[in-house]
Image (cartoon, rainbow over all chains, first blue to last red; front, side, top):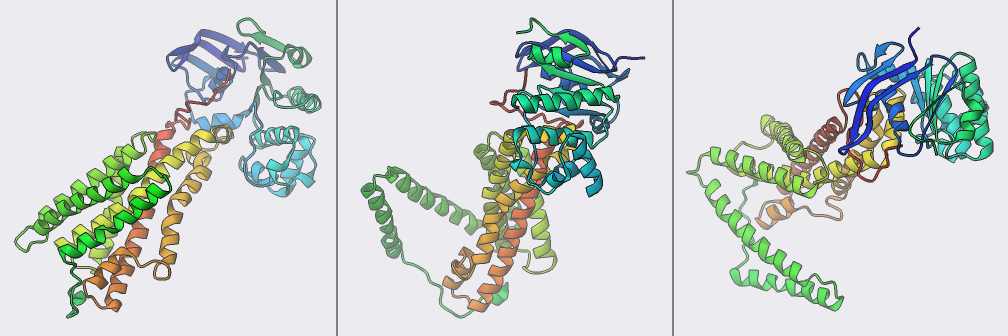
Length: 206
Length: 270
């Protein structure tokens, strides 16, 4: 079985500065793989290469054995969901946010909210009025609306308090247990110890 | 257009009268001095510049509108005007990638659409004086909106980069991910012209109408001409803003739906 993601000899520069040089990585196709590394080591860049928000200057990125540069990037991104560092909710209600990902009826939308421990009464609330932790759970629900087969989490709890962090960790770990493999980037080694089934590190972790 | 000619006397200010009108600049200069606005030199320079530019245009128009001059010269003048407007637009919006080409396309598209309607449906007869003046209206009135929509869209794509990328990560296309920013930029650029159109006649007597009335044209005829001009301007502003917005979007994203517009101040992650 091919790995979930495979980066081979990847080079990427930004503004003339190398971010990744001859970089190789294999991410197993099960559980939670945590990628740790100090700030600026290229962790977020790697996630963006996996769903083609970035493309390498040279080298290959594969998703389950298939070069991600082949095929429709929109289809790839719907299969490989991503939760960002800052909860980024859109203008409008919680339901509007979920519908930005997929045409959903109210029942399906309420079910999705249930998956992230938010009840249906949230559907009509203005997304920007939610707390940081609720917004990040909404972002996770919105990502799950496209039924992704893998999940990327980019420092997904760095803007959250301790309680909200634990809630999100539990939700994502549970998702991985139910068969959606996760690649989670963090600089928090304690968090890595709590959630990782597999660990990879870049440079010297701080 | 022959209908606009009437027997009313043309309001033709004497040279002495023009000098007297020029003394009104002193009012602006006095205000600048009294309030310490530091605009004295600027006011004087703008007044002199307007004098020189209008005198030069007067000479050119005298040539273009002469009966013996071929209308091809008027088309050439329109081409120069469009090029100059595109250059000015690019200079005013240096942060917009490829703005010269974009605005050149926008002014050309707008000119083709609006003039085709006006001349094609016989609203005005195609002749040097209608071609030159109406083209000037199209370009001149679209310029501010063109600069505004380009700058606003680039700014909002940069400021709302996180939102754009969050939408792209959901599998949205570039068009879908940027739709809220495109909509708000076009609205921002169009609203001033829409408001001007609403206010016309009540709080504003527009330039073309004032000109016709001073030239002795009957009010009913001046109103008809002005209405056609207002619609022309509204149509041209809408066309240029749409073309520029779509052009900026095309340049801001790659063919594989990645946001490739640089964000100088944005920390693009670890």
